Length: 256
Image (cartoon, rainbow, N blue to C red; front, side, top):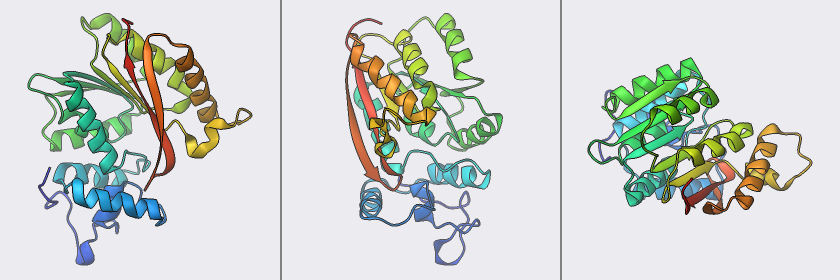
């Protein structure tokens, strides 16, 4: 994690990469975000606790160069995912929503020997960028990237697998969260940790009349979660370089 960017992130004067973004911008993953007190604190934390890493920084650079949306987790959020996976002792991880593979790298690096991440991506362009990023990080053997609509791939995984996942990270389209959550439960065991990202929506989650499908998807998920006896859960609001949002984390307490 301490290796600094070199040939994978060629820079010119003033630490700027070829596309004009600074290394600090790229590590934030959202170079257009205006400076705020919480984004400055985010950067302070990242500079202290998340050392620059060639493969991770290159993943952000290549994703940006390919025109992928700048919606990857931030570096300190990526490290949080990795720490949760390590605390959990996860050997089998499911990620719904790969994008450019940035969070996938964080999760895969938490695996013990013989562990595996299965990550699902519906967009062929995103999947191509992610595969290159994962190969650059040396993680081809520990990550299985499956291309296709998640709601078509998840039933196949359920039929194919002989064991549940230890950790599931849902970071795909928000309108689909209720169905992804249902499948996550199917693919879980007692003790599985499930994390769902982007569930506060800049505070819009409390607007029952919102016409935004993402907001309504999160609200349906929350209603399902509140009525689900097999999990113990909480949601945490977050601010940072990605703005105002939050994530839900839960533990499966009864066999799904």
